[in-house]
Image (cartoon, rainbow, N blue to C red; front, side):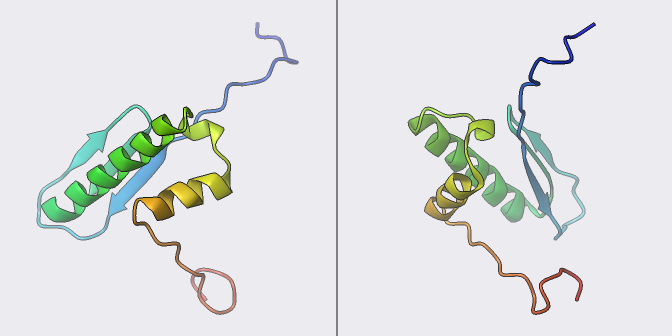
Length: 94
């Protein structure tokens, strides 16, 4: 039985979902990412972005689970992702 006082190892994964479709089912998995859906173009763009994020992580000597939210946001910005602002009212679906 595991020691209840031991820390669990953190694990993080990038999840990409393409909502557009051309009738093909696409799934791509890596060590720390899973990408599903999208047209060929969308899926290719998601794959390239996941690879670029991993390259940035490697250049910093870190794994995905080792970066803070702020550091991840910096990396995402560096690879061309943009953070969306929530709709007025502060909650999705408002």
